[in-house]
Amino acid sequence: MKKIMYSLAFAPLLSACAGGSSEGLLLLDKAAFDTVVDGQPVSLYTLDSGNGLVLQVTNYGLRVVSLWVPDKNGHYSDVSIGYENIERYVNNEGERFLGSIVGRYANRIANGAFKLDGKEYHLPQNNNGQTLHGGIKGLDRVVWNVDNVNATAIRFSYLSPDGADGFPGNLKIAVEYSVTPENEFKITYEAETDKPTVVNLSNHTFFNLKGEATGSITGHILTINAGHITPVNTVLIPTGELLPVDGTPFDFRTPVRIGERIGHDHVQLQNGAGYDHNWVLGSAKKDAVELAVTLLEPESGRIMEVYTDQPGVQFYSGNFFDGKANGKYGKPIAFREALALETQHFPDSPNQPSFPSTRLNPGEVYRHTCIYKFKTE
Image (cartoon, rainbow, N blue to C red; front, side, top):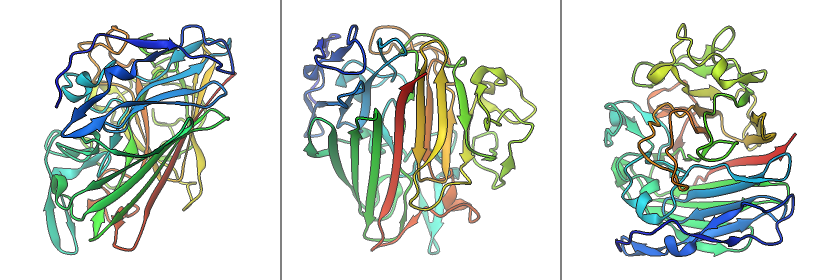
């Protein structure tokens, strides 16, 4: 790794940005990300929807570094949490998964082990004796190839070798990030394998629709189109049940302020009595991309809608942020100042035969679409 300590640097104001005034829209400097990691080139790329959404991403872990959208008055804020240079991502002392892709298996696998065709596979136990988001290396800590890039889309690829973090099969992955005139940030995933394996990919962007380091997300109003969750034990592994949300703090079928019930403990809300659970998107159909989540920040009027073709979405309420690490604008990332909404298959599916299968065989193609759409009211 080329060791460089960068100062906080920004590019000039973005010009000709529709959808509102570009006042205050400062883009991170590409020079703060141009380096070499593990012998591979790393850089920063900027996508512009042409209608008010500007995204910056690095090919180190496919991390969303900044995401600018206007509020109801046309004023911009960066609504994603991140760091100002590549050094802080590579030698990270704070939250590991800021803005990154996660996998080869997003979320948790119990005891770091699963069986496939009678053979047991052992993975790194990197989270309370469980495997979280792929293990020690993961897809978030590798440099991805940049295959194509233009003003509105960038396509990445990576070959995860057989045995990486204990997973079987050479897994060939292609991911595209794009922005649309409708102010959608769209992610599409594809993967193929040369031997049976399990795959569950997701994106771990942390959002605060008021902007980075502007206070708690507990005032955001959340709607999740799901009637069940997969309840978990004390180490956040699913019990195998599907729990109806009726009468519980997990019922977001109608809009609810996130902080309204977050302290209630009559239903398990481990780890600071916060949310870190998978909601069952019962209406999701194979190959159908449907609205799963709506998030509103009342003060700014910003709305984020989440669409997916996956059977689940993990809502994490930022329970482990502790203010010890600063974000890219020099302010601490404090407790519950960001949230994640990760479209996915269910946690621990390889060990839960009643859950939708995450098995991928040779000759099959894993596909996954996630769309984060921004607007105002």
